[in-house]
Image 1: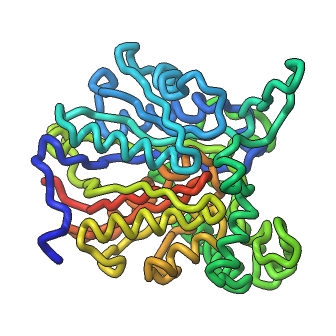
Image 2: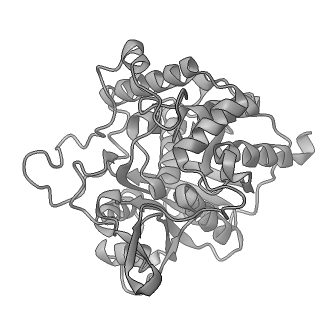
Length: 401
């Protein structure tokens, strides 16, 4: 088995993540509602450059995921808004919920291809300012719709909540387990915030409005102090009569941005980086759209098998908690106890800023790895994706000195 483990690439092609920043994650139509996507992302990019000591002109490209924006290449727009020189290009990626993680995956592959490039990669979502969507009806009149089509109708194209119910039913995920996961997510997020564990990674967008707007403490606004098991038990089924998926054990829509600096080990050392997360391997898998929430587990299974690893060998796990049902189904399938994942809480407490959420996972993993540095510790970022997909990334903490 050991001979199948991922091997390090040469230092000039081994991708490593050396810095990560994010905005607060705030409820849609809440504290960040006045900021379009590029204005959310720009302070994150500026924070990365200053924090990592990266000269703006040395950035090879800015690769950003976005799911429900207005198009027009938000990566390029945000890069210019952040003050990067016009010589730095931008690329926007859309793999829906997986966009932020897939942007990081793409940047890592560009580094591995050679050239010692240096990339800013991640994701952004401003659900509050996303454009209204309409298609042309017969006669050319606009016909508004709330979401894009993700799969052919012949295969089934369920709404996300319905798909979460499908997963709960297929894999036997009880209401009690879902509620328990949601409660633990809120409690962990509250404890981590109180301990200041999010402070170093969080940057505050500029231009704070008046009362009810941005807060000086730069905090996420989702975790609920008054949430208890009894409160969660009172929530009715949200998507299917007699179902188990509720508003309490589902994420809420959020605005936010997150990104990382990713380059080669050789270039990272030149920048003076002392440590980072090596990107060892990644995988994206397709699954039945009716069971889209299981996609992350299938991608992770293939990834771990290819690397000759078991889930028990992975020390840190971050899974995007869009719904408790799919989180538990994926972790069960991988043999990962739910208690081992999302040590600082997840999207059930912090919210789901679609295109940014995958990059938030990596931001959390870098912070956790540095909090208790263990040379060679493996980390796994996982996200299930609309339309029946999932992406997984295997990372490894390493000292670069």
